[in-house]
Length: 452
Ligand code: NAI
Image (tube, rainbow, N blue to C red; front, side, top):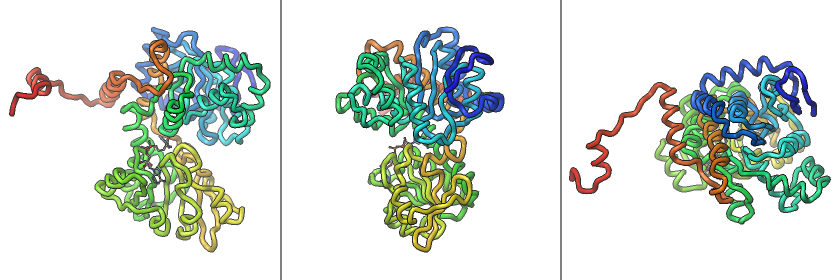
């Protein structure tokens, strides 16, 4: 870790690739900001009202230009911010440098960092001593609770070594200091709801993912577009005429399926939920089991939040040249150890982000180490959808500070009124308007005996 004391508004500890990339990162962040009109309005209000004054925020998010705009918004609100990556491959090194150099934000993230460094960076963000944490996958909340429960063996080594060197009161203080957390993604919310159900969650969490202005847009249109972008950037394959298999027809899967179809692919959906499967059928896709899809797919993408969706028997059944990728949160949806075993422990990189495995006589190509392909090989979601997700994040943090006394230690939503206001502002920014109910329409909708 290093500290800079010049060229920076504050003494800042950080660990980024190269501070000289800051200028490029600044331009990239400004470009994203142009499409983040709602967050800009939040920032302007935060700068006046300082709702986060004196609060330390530790964020574990994808370190991208959009996230830089969120961090700057929190800082405008008075927060002292530390940021680490929620994925070792998703960091934009120039943006990380910009945040440190131009905004004095403590950033700990380097694209391609090994596991040890990745967790050391999470440790550094926790060591910031947060009042509020922001997660994308519940890693920080999970680690804080492992510490509080004394389950040190379940901690990543870098964090474990650190807490083992602390006395019990310092460990307790870490958790006691936290007012609450916000959570970005479906997988994180599932983990947090499981913690709340077990009665071990020690502070309130705001589920940003449950806001309609988050999952209806970010998960669907953001993941839809950027996942296809990642697959194309990694492979330069033609989607038109290909058979594209989407595993999981949730918000993300719907987005990817519709974008793949838009490019002319024949899309197959696999599901475990009959309702979602039925929806996919009526949306015009072929639905079948992965066992049936494996031999006919050209390109596969998993978006389920589940483990082992593509596994040994599927790899063995695939065509020569099949391409497999994941855009779900963790790199567990494809059973990579099983693929490695089938290929006799051998593989080779044939292009950046494309690893070739020979299974029997056939080649299977794994993209981006099975990690979120939209962040590994492309740039993640476009700024325009992250605008709404991060407006929810910043307003969620403000809500935690304002309502801390009334919030129980469970998973809460961003208030509905805030969600609707974000939609209204976004619509306005995109140049569209809605009609206003006439008094007669209002009366009609509130009555049961009119117009029958
Ligand atoms: P969701 O809960 O709406 O959808 C997941 C779907 O997968 C469900 O319909 C479920 O029935 C299905 N499923 C579960 N196990 C399956 C299996 N074995 N085979 C086939 N289908 C299965 O969740 P959402 O919001 O679509 O998120 C999916 C994943 O993507 C999560 O891990 C989430 O955290 C992640 N995510 C990734 C983003 C990205 O940038 N790539 C952005 C947002 C979310």
